[in-house]
Length: 232
Image 1 (cartoon, rainbow, N blue to C red):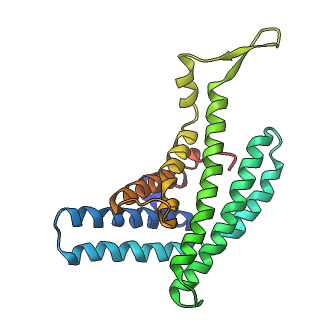
Image 2: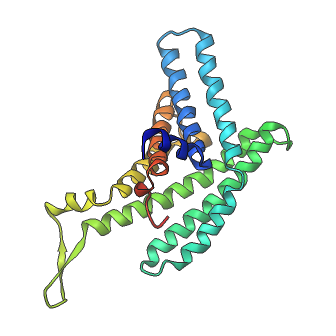
Image 3: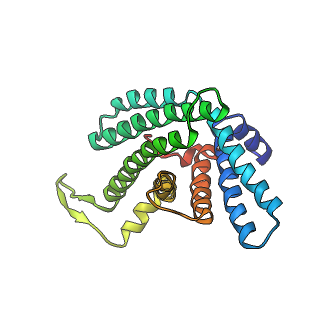
């Protein structure tokens, strides 16, 4: 597939456009910080901030109905029989994200004035579910990484020896680039909801950089489905 065809295919996907908007959103946030620190005019700084805000609102439109996708995904995850721990983590993450997206729809309506409420308060409430979903995601990443590291060596007679560690650990991890990418995405995102809730205070530049890293990591599996962590 040539680059033009790949771009067209990517843009045809709602998820692809959402990921693209997220990249623009956090790139704009980082740019506003760098412009301000670099002594750029107030006009350019405000332009970057406006782009950040507008893309954030656009993303909420792209995500309408996403809560239903999460609920269906959680139900389908019940069919995972080879690993009960993995199944529970995936179900819990998707169920939490379903609530996150329901609140996201309310926040979007409040921003547009369709629902009389304070968007900032709803955003803080929404961030709590984002943080919980990230915890489940990172637990899943850690669980799979440990499974890769502590792989039992099979004897010729079918028995098991002690778990092995050594030079082969790196090669095992390299067999799952999808896992590495998902871990980067979740790790980069982890502090952001706490920043929204006011639990910690990140400067705009750091928040923009972390969001940009996680956005790029999240867009790669949409561009190349082979990089998607499965089951998900």
